[in-house]
Image 1 (spheres, rainbow, N blue to C red):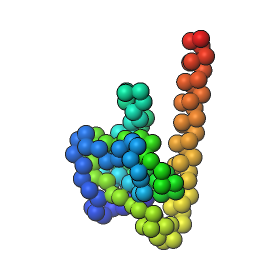
Image 2: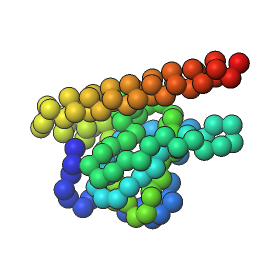
Image 3: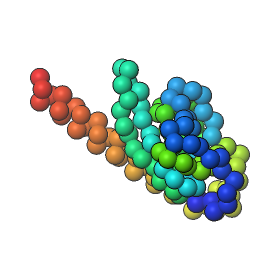
Image 4: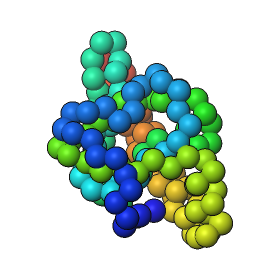
Length: 128
């Protein structure tokens, strides 16, 4: 999904791009820089991931239109392109392999999350 044009918005270091709990209806592609993904749980931030140029985030909102599950903020200056559902569908028509790449990435993220959950649950059982 690497869009080489410079149409995205520039976010300053620490600026929030997506806020956990807010309604979402679009996804984002990082054109330049880094972003940090964190989840706020019990008054604490839990670091989830760092995403880089060419990667995307917020894709679940394209499919579900639910509230955001995480906060994403710029790490340093970052240029990020917003893609709504209409543009996403148009891009898939132009490049059907895009759908495969998005599903593959989502699958990898689900697998990583499942591994983290299993590790956490095993640690919890060992503490008891």
